[in-house]
Length: 473
Image (spheres, rainbow, N blue to C red):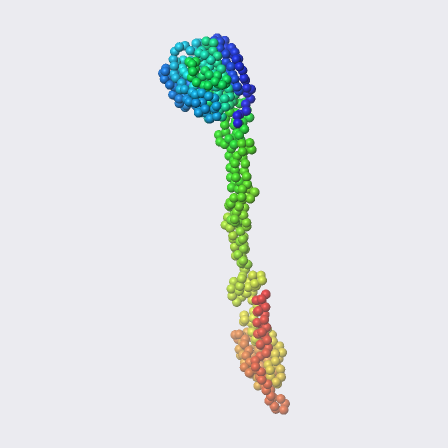
């Protein structure tokens, strides 16, 4: 899109330009199309380079690339082949160096300069795209009507400046009002009126070609080409300066497809691509609404004795829980047992033997009213282990023997005899016969048989029951 400019198109036909005082200016300069005619070299702004043709030999071709380093190149052949889009008929020839014949009588109007050799047969040129040339001027000879025609970058003929001398020479130029010149021709054919470009006649004689950027702007808005994708143009010293780089639409988001629209600028559309959100606590990451994410990682290890969590960097973490147990093997042997409901180790209660001695070496149980199975009566006993010694004593045929630690054993029977027991070590009572014998008043000795201590059996069953209850708790 062409830049917008603050200039107003100046279209004039047959406008007579009066020469400044002291300079001969009898000819006329006119402009056709969307261009302005320049009549003085001082109207050129931002001059890029000058071709004076003084380094050639008369009659020789001007090298086509002679001024390419300065941004201007000559072309030959059909105009339509020089710039795409051109429809103007005709072709260009290679210009020549020429001297003599006084084609530039002085003083030359408008500050024109003609010295040494000059160029013959005019020519077609293009300018470097990076230069954005919008102004051009040359010193036109006194020999016949001459035309400067310009096309834009798209091959559209946008204007023409006509020089009709009156036996004089002058500086003649064209200003495209900010539109970069795509191609320019100088000759004696009225292309604006539909003529075909050629080298016919001997009037295509000129000297000192100058190209410039021109006054393109007063503000940044004057340089706006309507395309946001090539960056923002700025106005610097009345010259439009293109952005150093095109618009960068990369938003660094893998979940968007980035593109640029000339009117809207950057477009970042959300996609559904696979991605990596950088979080070790998610898996199967995919884009949604422009954001990368995934399903939470399952870190549970089905172990009641670990604390399960997830770290964004390291992933799953299963920290052991202090004091937690899964079985008795995780607890202190013989001192603790595992409570499977709470997964904690708990102290084991001391177990008591049948004679009242605990597994830890102390006697805490008291037995009373234990019947030993004798028919002669019942035995009431109190067992309290306090010291050490040996036990001896019998009544009515009863034998009691034992050894103990830390206690005394006192037994009273219905036979009226008593014995005192002192033992050391672990207390153990053992009934070898389970019988109690006695003599009644009539002198009859009656015996009843027994097989073991019923009280001891009940005590053992109680311990087993208590232990199983603790384990099931």
